Amino acid sequence: MLKVDSIEKGIVLDHIKAGKAMQIYKYLNLDNLDCSVAIIKNVKSNKLGAKDIIKINDNIDINLDVLGYIDPNITVNIIEDNKTVEKKRLELPEKIVNVAKCKNPRCITSIEQELDHVFKLVDKENGVYRCLYCDQKAGK
Image (tube, rainbow, N blue to C red; front, side, top):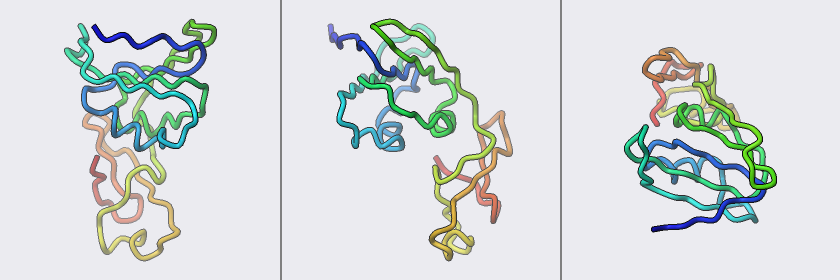
């Protein structure tokens, strides 16, 4: 059996849809951290069948909008002194800024490079986001 030590102080991202951990690692720029980061993939889960877990051995600022966009079912556990002191539940954010890029070559964001890529939630049930400028659907 695989054993990953508990963390004394930090963040545990739990209930990540199986296979999404590397995408989250990239989106949150976890490769730039100086602390330990453990990615555990395809863990057996009664609720999900299989899930991924990310353990970050430091309390860092996490962009909850990015996490909510990728997978709103993730649980964010804040750890202090080896104990969970806070659990954050995520939701789909109403809008995301510079998380996804507009794929429409005629969109103003393709021409004006310094313009923020802004997407708004248009279909909460299906998690559909559209570009604020050209209405192009965001791809995950």
